Image (cartoon, rainbow, N blue to C red; front, side, top):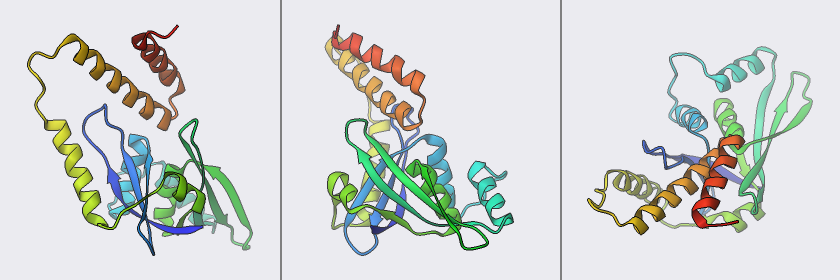
Length: 205
């Protein structure tokens, strides 16, 4: 396992762009970007920046409950990536007041949101980093550039008179992005509907 740290959340006001949490290898240049839901993105961003919400959200409540019963999250691990389903897997390791350790299967977004609230270390499997990670040498400048690029893409002017073909391509790309987001947020009924719509536009039988 490789120790990682949260570098930030890439997000956008555009509903067609889904958030990503960016993890970086602590003692190296491997980065890992994971698509997450908007609620989870807000939860991770809030904890990462040490901001306190006006009212506790579900992760804050889980943190309070575990602390109250003398239990805590001691580490989380991003263990696997399913390339066919584009899905990440994670484990949350929790210890109780007697020192007994429990391991729970979880989504990476949930694991990261809880890890930040417990100041617990975040690890990623070497295989995951080699399969879907990327190596960068410019560190924080890359994350900043990505955020700026997303902002520019949102405010970029559209063509006044797009062709029918261009409109169809744009619609297909938007549907694909929405499908990715629906899967990330585990809204499977919406994901199924979007897949059908994409198939229709592609002319699939």
